[in-house]
Amino acid sequence: MPKDFSRSLRVADQIQRELADLLRHEIKDPRLDQITITAVEVTRDYAYAKVFYTTLGESEKITLVEKGLEKAIGFIRSSLSKRMQLRVVPQLIFVYDKSVEHGAYMSKLIDEAVAQENKNET
Image 1 (cartoon, rainbow, N blue to C red):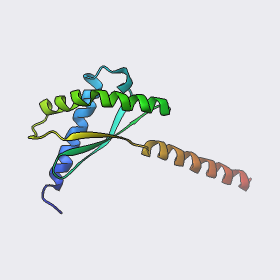
Image 2 (image 1 turned 90 degrees about the vertical axis):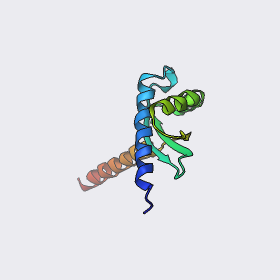
Image 3 (image 1 turned 60 degrees about the vertical axis):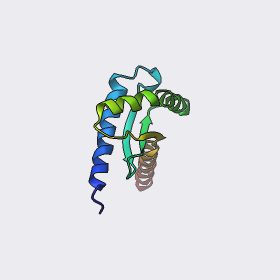
Image 4 (image 1 turned 180 degrees about the vertical axis):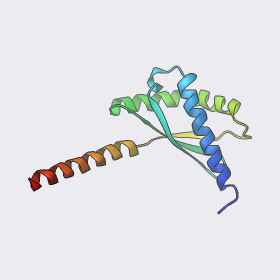
């Protein structure tokens, strides 16, 4: 295991906390009011950070959130540089996280299968 592996995890965790705080308290864009940062992955050289997010709503809401994030990315990155003690603040790449939707869909399928099984037993 590389030595800096734990440091990159700590940096990713700190970025996630700071982004959540920024989105909650400082960004006033109404498109970004119901966004949740689910994970952050930082490259080994700290040049890039993939920020996984999710939001409630339909596909139109997701496209609005994407546009809002693109517009606010400069402000977000400069605010991160002021809050964090890093020599270089990573370039942020926002990626929509479909795992929450997928989990809800799988849960629904399981519930339907259990209901069908109970119906067949009676």
